[in-house]
Length: 178
Image (cartoon, rainbow, N blue to C red):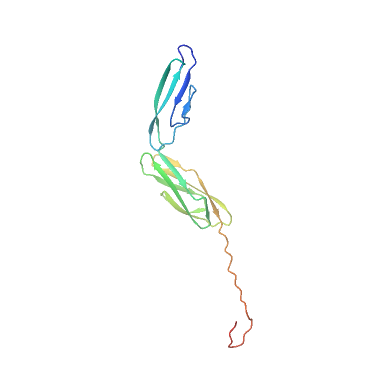
């Protein structure tokens, strides 16, 4: 924009819902909000030369990601323990979702095409960092979750029970040993 009188221009952006929500420069870079459905949002700027002001408004369509997913896994597990994992996933198109799990060798099991699964922590003799993630697909689009780290700890050795025989170490025939 430019002033017909050669005056400097002043800008006031109104971009509620975006980051940043306001601005005062001639141009503004915006970050769209995370949404679950496609949404139309207005962006406007008031341009003024100190005497005259015009307002320009544009509608922007924010496209929701086709798939969103959040992976939940425990931070730690003991050797041999069950390790439950779950992905909360959604398709903005309503298509059915498929799940492909990937894990390191210290998580035993094959979850299959399911949003929740249970691995078994492998037997370990020292602490090991296991990893798991899941690829969620609707047949056209996909999303790979960030990898979660699970610390596998060795089982604490259980000491054998202590036993001791006390008392007399000799006995007479037919008498009670005390």
